[in-house]
Structure formats: C-alpha cells, structure tokens
Length: 478
Ligand SMILES: [Ca+2]
Image (tube, rainbow, N blue to C red; front, top):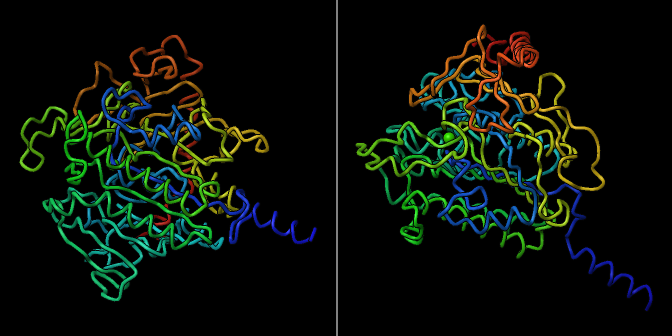
C-alpha cells in the first residue's frame, strides 16, 4: 500500500509524459514585424491595449533595454536565428527582395538546427525573409525554412508588401511548387486583402495545432507575424476594437493570439516547460509617418507604430530602429515580475537557448550573442555575463556601437532624411549616454575622449573580426 501511495504521489508530481521543467524546455519565439517600442501597454502606449503581453511580462521578465539585432527585416532575422551580426551573413542588403541570389548560407547554424539535433520538433509560422528560390540561384531549395532546421512551415518568403514575389507557402508538401517540398498557397499577396486580414490568426492557429500535436516532446516554435508591417490588416473580429485605429487593431489581434497560445500551453499542461520570448524585428517604419495618401497604403501615416521615447525608427541606427519590446516568460522558472535592467539583444537568444537545452555552440565561427541565463533572476543560474558590446550596422557597414551605457556613432542614417542636426564620421564621432539620454540629444564626445577611444576600439575589433572570418558566401567566392 505504501509503495502504491508513493507511486501515486510520483504520478501526481509528474503527470504522464511530463518532463521536469528544466529538462529540454520548449521554446517559443514570437517576432513581430516593424512594431515599435512604444506600441504596447506596458511600454507606455496610452491607448493600444495589450493585456496578454502585460500579463506575460508580469509572469516573467521584462527587458526594458532590449535590442533587435539589426534595424531591418532580413538582417534582424539572421541575427535572431544565428546569434550573429548580419555583416557576417554575406547577404547583400539588410532587407533582401525575392529576386536576390544569396540566401542564408547552408553552413549557418540556426536555433532550429541546434534544437533539432537535440531531438526537438521544430515549427515555423510566419515570415521568413532569409532567401527565396529564384532563377539567379537556380531555384535553390536551401533558401527556405525546411533546409534550415524547421520540420514545418507556413508563411511568407518575404514581407507582405512586395508587389510581386510575396508569397504564402507551406511545407512539407508533395505539390513541389515552387520547389521540392513546398506548396505555394497564394502568390503576390500584397493586394490580397482577405488573405492578409487572416494571416495573424492563421499563424497562431498553426502554432496552437503544433503545440497540441507535440505536447509530449520538446518543441521549438518560431512565430513571425507579418503584422504590423505595411500593408497593415486585421481580421473582422478585431477591426474597430482599438482607439488607435487599424494599427492598434493589428497589435491587439497579435496580443489576443499571444493569449490563445499561452492558454494552449496551460491546456496541454506544459506552461511550466515552456519559455516564450516576445519581441520585434526592428522599429516602426517612419519613412511613411507623414504619408497622407499612399497608392497602396492610403492614410499610411496612421499605420505606423511608435518608437517613443526613442529617436527615429526602422532602417536607422538611432535607438528607435533597434530598441524593441522584450519579454521572456517561463512560469515557475523565471520569477514573476523580473526586470532585467541590463541591456540585451536578440543575438543573445541562441546562446541562451542553447545553454538551456544542451545544444552545442559552433566553435568554427564567431557568435556575437551572449548566454544571458544569469540575468533571468533564477537562483541556481548565477555567473558572469560578458559585457554588452553591441554593433549597429546598416546594409554594409558599422554605424554605431553600444558599450555599457555609452553609444558611439561613426555614421548616422534615417529613411526620413532627418539628421536631427547632427553629423557623424569615424574622425568625428558622436557619443551619447543612452541610459540617461535615451533619445540621443546630448553629444558627449568632446568631454569624454576616453569613452570615444573605447567605442572606436569596440567598432574596430568587430570590423577586424568580420574581415578576418569573412562570410561563408565570401569564403566560397559565390
Ligand atoms: Ca521588419
């Protein structure tokens, strides 16, 4: 009898199929497209309602100093999936169209590949933007997600705005369109309003189906909504629900689907086995912030998010281009209401997730991200985290670096053309203390010559590393 009771209590502690929380945790990364830092209730938006994200932040860790790896789509997604700055990718621009020859190089190791090798089921639901099979690359099937560690994918090859070549696809499939293993569901979707309106829910439904199907094995989900990238759309259920108009509706729809995903984890009894990371790939697309009448987006100026309190937005290396929402939640492991005061970035996701899951970091290349497990407020995860040394680069070159609270600019760019009264060059850089002066108004270069030297050395060390290693594409001369 005593043995029987002991067995029962063990069963209650670990219900059938359940794993201890720290053993191969599930990982869900939710990466928005072009959402600004200030687009959420907990980051100060006065009208957009994001109760599910607020709850997630309360249940876990808020990162008020979180950065996307880059200021534009492709570069940022490369950084998220590989832990490497995009200047190491060999890709020709920080956003690549569907007709670009290169794609994420087959030798790159993605989070999905690392976790798949650890026995994880891997699903991707949403925008890829790391390559497209096309005539220039011989319809390379290696350009798409299934060749990069994902067992399953439904989503778009590029952003939802490309007039031709923005396609909704899925795989695996026996249709073999456009390449082996894929099925083209819809092509040229930029003007397909009913389809665009359904994308957010469609991806969330697919993710929830995957959670239910894989609840007994470790899994990795990479969910990348096309929203709120222009053209902005929301489903009928959410249209008109936000005081902020259609843009707010789109954010609120994403928030509601975050809530559905968390509820699915609870239903499956695996919420304590699952780390969720919620962030955005870059800041808001303020190039269109004054566009009252756009041929495709109409009143575009109201369909752009907010980077407040940071300066500028997408495709700039001002803080508004890369300071994004950062929330990490793992009930029962990361203590509730943790605030990670230190800066961190999406480059840190791969090394941290690998350390949590037993996946091995590759040793034949530089990983720019850090294992930030000790920052998560978990008692048994003490230890030092390397200092934050963060490089801001545009399509081809370094613009700035952050080191501690300081940020040095050797180049400034903005899609709006607004330079805010500044100029910057390697010979005459700008220096801001961005923890006090987060909208980068007060240049301290003249009075902080030692910090200028330190910042220039951070940039030079990175440049030397990139020049020495070269991208896999450049090593091959392709
Ligand atoms: Ca983007």
